[in-house]
Length: 433
Ligand code: NDP
Image 1 (cartoon, rainbow, N blue to C red):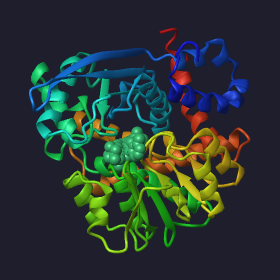
Image 2: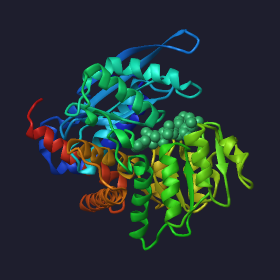
Image 3: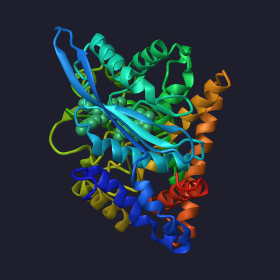
Image 4: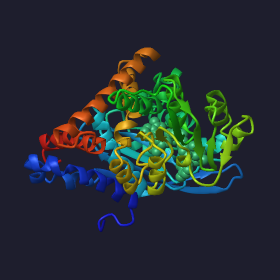
């Protein structure tokens, strides 16, 4: 805390992991001897830079850019870019730290990193977003490369932003290095299923949690928060599996749609028009926009938080438990507060942390890198099969690890230990670097 003052989200993410690791440290004194924990808490490299750009009125604007290259023991740094006004170093470091464990859990050869800016793309014209992305990449390009650091999207960074970033990288370097960014468009090196991967993967993970209890998504009531990339495709997959998804949200409030979300309308409003929750409600009879309370007040069987960090506080966890929630799987990163997690654990709710449940996005990014390296493009069905088997493996790895360390059913402990061991072993094998 003294070393990283004020970085509250980073402290929270590190504490959650460290709290899980004592059983593995007791069994493996080499981790303590090599001081692996302290090394893991310090990012390998942190880059902070000025991003000057001109708005449509000709006024100069300044934002701050970040890239935290956290850990490259398992492969090149890999992790998204977030554009949101709340971004500061503590958020990027928490996301980068989580990413190291998540990427390890996927079993793919990728290290962990994260980046972004306090730039707010909402309400900006396409031309303003383009000028911002070009300026951002004009500094960042020197740190990137398919063998070095490979960013992707996150909050506020989707296909449009990746396009502008890739265009500028290609122009500056004079290299068509497709493997330098993931989440690209399908005609210029992107992978089928990447858009859907995080949301689909979260639902596939939750489905496996249910299967182990003899249940399934069929007929379950599902609450989803968020109305962006992860939320939309979590809703799509849950509906494909027969669930009734009755909510989504954005920063203006949450929508309760008792008949089930109209996915086509949601995609039209959010993906095509870049509209707000109110635009959905105005075209959908029976749906209500609520600006008081939270989406977690709706009685539900399954909760999928897919918006942002700390969006599910202790009061909401209590409300969900009171209303009989059975499964919570995180599409977002660290959406449940530590006190909220304790409520779920105490009540015996099956709870999966984001670093395990939402790893399908980065895993499919690694599949995009494989396709770029072999100049190939795979079918939707094949790529989705690969995603499904990766999610099954992550789930089962968490379950077996939790059992091995005497905490059956504890997905937090399972994910943290399973993610940690691979990175720690690689770091020790490579010596003091
Ligand atoms: P998007 O930008 O596509 O959507 C984010 C959604 O969450 C929007 O509806 C946004 O509402 C809402 N939101 C964001 N911040 C807040 C806030 N402070 N309060 C209320 N609502 C908020 O992002 P993604 O769907 O890509 O990301 C969502 C989460 O999933 C993040 O935690 C991200 O780190 C995580 N994630 C994403 C992956 C990916 O592949 N995209 C991979 C793994 C994890 P509004 O538009 O009103 O701001």
